[in-house]
Amino acid sequence: MLTTTAIIYLLITIIAAILLVVYIISSSASKKLATPPRKTGSWSPRDLGFEYEKVEVKTSDGLTLRGWLIPRGSEKTVIVIHGYTSCKWDEWYMKPVINILARHDFNVVAFDMRAHGESDGEKTTLGYREVDDIGAIINYLKERGLASRLGIIGYSMGGAITLMSLSRYEELKAGVADSPYIDIRASGKRWINRVGAPLRYILLASYPLIMRLTASRTGASPEKLVMYQYAKSITKPLLIIGGQQDDLVAIDEVRKFYEEVKKVNSNVELWETTSKHVSAIQDYPREYEERIVGFFNRWL
Image (cartoon, rainbow, N blue to C red; front, side, top):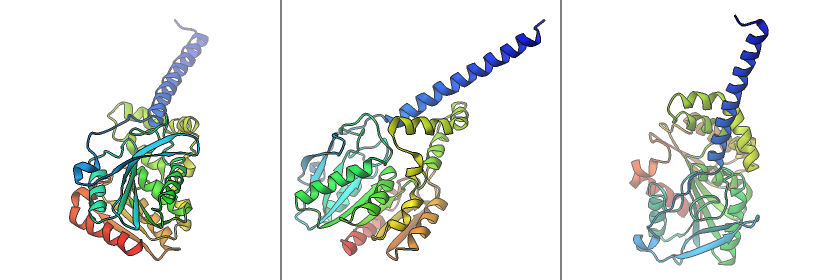
């Protein structure tokens, strides 16, 4: 029969083992979050009928971002930003929006963000340092004489980058944010809900630890990736696209953010669709084209 001391020792051992397992799982999850799998593709703008240049930009911390520049002989240029785990070759939203903008004679610039596609970087910062990278892209476009009438459109993480960039860079005249995360902490938790049980329950229980470990790995505080704090600084024309069936970004968060921007910006629009995450361009192709082309033609 076990003594009281033995029982206590056994319980402590079990608890310590459980905590160790939770830490190992949390550490692994945070590492995967900070180092998404790289994706590339085989198509190029030439397959869409457009001549293009392969271009490179050096970031403030010495990384090389690689992308495409599609010159259309226009004074209007639009930067296109992909989402987390995606790349400039994405065929769900990047390819169609590049095609739309180029067909309507906007100069188009699309880069792989750090730690994505063929750009340098071992870790993503989920939008935090990527906003600095947008500054490097803007400086490059200024050197090329392509920044006098400059817009930006981004998807998911790229949508959040768009919002933060609009609050910072005077050179950006207007922007479109499609399915932007509003609160990275809430969207991260919803991402976990896509994981099957029982791992999902372990990840949800250890989520605060995962966020702290990820912040430590990337140097990006999750509190800095909550969009409400940038709302009052966004005074440029802005079109927000939100989906009622988006399982990563709650439509209520999008509505709340829109209302916050609206307090200081009469040129903010919200297009609320029935779509899932970054899917409006697939669900409403004609209206999508009309809306973004009309928006950029109006404000650039």
